[in-house]
Image 1: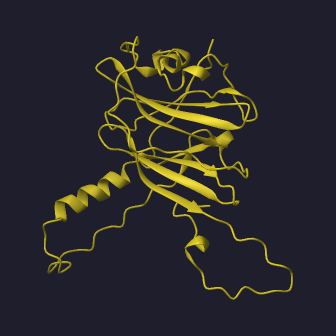
Image 2: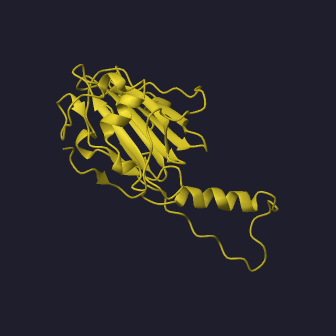
Length: 236
């Protein structure tokens, strides 16, 4: 019997609120505030929140995640029908078997902590904004590589809307988006951000941050700060 899936609520819709304000004011004048207008309040930007906390913040000198944005339109998985209980009522193994990309990992056992090969407990978040939780699934292999997939439900059918992979892969939410982190070979980190575009979770940013090598003792660094020295926009 599979462990009960943990449910997470989306951290907020601040990003959508900002977009809505920009759309409503896009045709307005650019002279600033009118006479007697009050300054708009500053929106609090969401901070990353780990989907699988036990797998967050791990380090490894291995390549980062693979993210593909040029994909055909998602098609429903064959042989699956969703009952009124939603995706949470389906067996995660059945979903993985129905997806050709995850089928080789579908019969692995469930795991509850890093360091083992198997399927992490599925998580449920509303990433598409339809008030129904989508299923987030990750499977870890013996080589240290992980596969991460997201599924949504429409009209009683299951659709794959994200597939990516990487070593020591960790996943976070940032507002309504997903942030997939993996270490880089140079000791830095790759962070790929995905956002629902109406059809799939598409890539909106792909940032690599590299750490500087340690300086010998007694020396100073006279270099000017560059892009590689800038902190990640989503925290360390």
